[in-house]
Image (cartoon, rainbow, N blue to C red):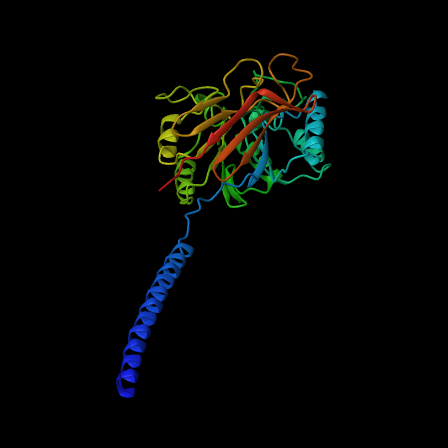
Length: 344
């Protein structure tokens, strides 16, 4: 083999080896690149994380119904003072306090002064109220201060009763609405009593203006958040309008509320204890709760019992619980958790 032939052979072997090395390198590179791309794809996959509802309440408030503050009965002012003291120092948050009608026993000037004095004695959250039938009872009181049915209305008017209530709470009309922490509250009040409309008896009469106002106010909430509607007299059976001791225009009231599944209606008036076996929650197209009384519980032990309702709003539910002010404890019979409906 000549020198030239030997060199030619070496060069051909080099090409083969170089080609093999290049091929091996290319194979390893492609393998690495493929693996890196796969890892990159894996790293960029974003798992869908479902939001977890907050365990903290977004809103908390108390509802006290049927205070019946009276200058003739020392127990009702005493019970209210005890309730307000506990609310002031309550171990859970209290963003608002709602007073659900029958604030006084006879709606007199002296009783409103007594109520004002009691309320101003405590450091309370935002305070709102509506009227009950007893807040019109001044027409039964004669010049001597006696309860006199024979001489009713004793020179008094329903308009004066409304003005007295409105002056107390700085309202321009007996019904009112407000927002607390983004949640809408609507407070309905009966607008007439026996002096103006003898046919209403002890029922709650809402005018055309108030019913139209209710419908308009409900429409302001468009995000499905719960809406709280405070009334005094309870509703009659479904399909009926109410008479004495009931909400009179009940059919229209229910129809107005029908499009809003997360409405919570709270009434009072019955004075039934949470723990005496009576019904306090009814599910209709809305949620209806009947509050007990802070001033005059019906039975048992009316002189000592004093009850209220504590409501907390969460992202996905509303809880409603009864509180016994007489011994500062929760009432086991009054404990509801209502899931909120998702509104599209």
